[in-house]
Image (cartoon, rainbow, N blue to C red):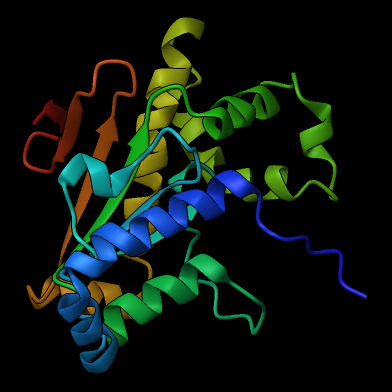
Length: 215
């Protein structure tokens, strides 16, 4: 027996409203997407945080973005070990099958995953050090970023580590042979963003300057 229950009423109500309005008014577009398949121009890797709403920020329509969300918008290093890798599988599909033109890593302020990584690496979260902690082992990806910001003052470390979550992911993406080939052949570009949740500001990484600048 499965433990799944029926949807709560408020979600059913929202769905029926969407079906009667947005879907009904754009039925031909949804039919085309179903028949022709998806052709997104960009992949976005963002955080699971409910406050990060990528499609709203960019005013994106259905079928425009291939989106993968995980804790702290991290990409692990290329590790073809025969195990199960959700993020790596999403990257492979976006680059190899969908052939997206842009791959965007989007971090954000006040990230709980980044704060957890900081606490773990500074010895303040022993529970995350446990081998059985899925969050802790995932946040191990960001340890190189913590090492780079550990010399800053404590109040500067977490904001800097949020930027490192983007930088580490961009660095790890280039360890994937098919990503490197797509970038070096100029078939695809990589982008790093930070979204300030409080004031809506967006910062992008400028590779020429080696810093984040306001969009």
